Each structure stands twice: as C-alpha cells, then as structure tokens.
Image (cartoon, rainbow, N blue to C red; front, side, top):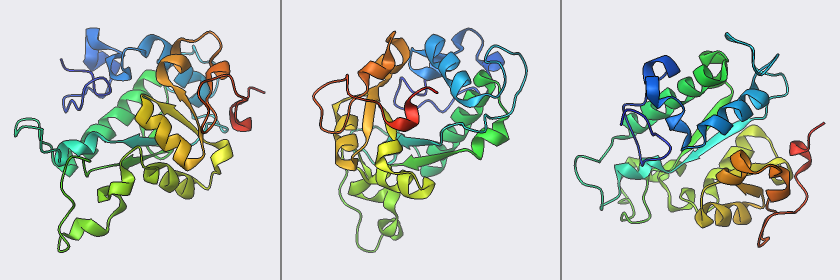
Length: 223
C-alpha cells in the first residue's frame, strides 16, 4: 500500500496530498479518516470547516505534539534489514505526514509545520542500551525514558509548549500510552473513542482512572 503511515509501523511512501493518494485518501489516519479529518478541520482551520481551499490556522488552535515511536525501526533487533530505517528516513515520514494532514484539513503546510512538534523515540525497548561512547547517548530521543510507557516524551512536549498537565490531552492507542499519560499526570482518550463516540468528552480518562467519564480538562471543554 502507498498509504497507511499510522496503521502500519512506518510507510516511507506516504503521499503528501490527497490527490496523490487517490483511492487511498484518509488511510494515513489509521482507519478513522472519515471522522478524523472533519475533527481536525474544526480544531485547526479558521472559517467554515466545510469551506474549500486553503485557510489560515485558527488563532485558538490547540498546540499539537506528535509523540512517536516509529523511530524504533532504527534499533529494534526484531526488524529485518529491509524494514530497518535511518533516523533521517523517520523524520522524512514525519514531515510528509504533517504536509498530508495540512492538505486534508485545508490549511497551509508551512503554517501547520510551524505549529506542531515531533517527539521521536528512537531506542526500542528491545534494543540494548547505547554504548558510553555513542554520541547519541546524550540525546533525549535516544534514551529509555523517551519510550512509552515512560513519560519522557510527554514531559518534554509540555516543557516546550509551556502547558501544564491539566491542559494536556493524550490521544492514546493502547494501554502503554495510557500508562505514559498516568505517569505524566495528563488525561487521555483512545483514538477510536475520540473519532467514533457520539459523546467523546464522556470518554476522557483522568490520570489513574480505570475508565472514561471523568470531567474533561478545561482546555477541551467547548465554549
């Protein structure tokens, strides 16, 4: 498949525009594209969510941090030579994904690139620790603490954006993500609940809670 960056481990052939994707449009959104794209348009796009053309970012658009472990394809010993990626290749897929999201949502690619930040984890939990002499050892992205369920990525993102845990929401995929949210003291919601639930705010999960239904962080309550 040409598409599927978020529903497969990594796909380096990710198309940067919907037109180039053709019949695979929305596949980059892990099967929730028909719901995720309208949601992102409401969150990010100034003016009408259904307007055609390219619009500016909303002045109150939430800060977005992508916390990714696609970089584990650089170091995971279970990945064969054909599946192994360089750090540069992982960053290129991330760049393409942001441009694709901008195209789908209808905002300028450069504007969105300046609004979001990536937090890559490159050291797979299955990989040995880096040697003392390895120059990557001092970089957070190459530390054990940066791989979920450790909260290093979330702590770094909140530090960069100057956002407290009470105003942070992690869109999670699995129990490992929820454990990272708990450790960082932030609320979370599963991606399928965010995109498919008729009442997603009721599905928000406070840190340490066993399920949804807790009060939403103030930053995510509609006004």
